[in-house]
Image 1 (tube, rainbow, N blue to C red):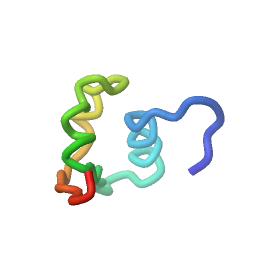
Image 2: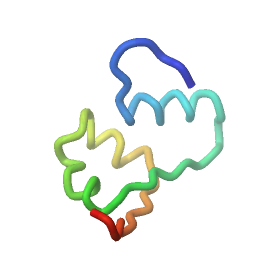
Image 3: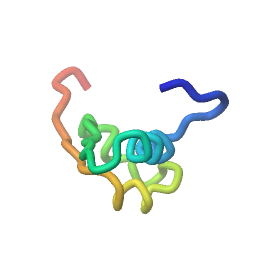
Image 4: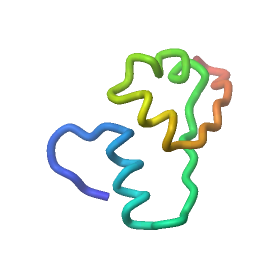
Length: 60
């Protein structure tokens, strides 16, 4: 998926949902990234739209 300018995760999920109606998508996040999610752009919309899989990254 190519878009110009700044690309936010919430916008990517919206574009995927539009392109693939009825599909379910999951966001895979390292535990370290998940700890920072409250600072993400439109996080409340993302939390409503996405399923999350959080995992530990041993090297982080």
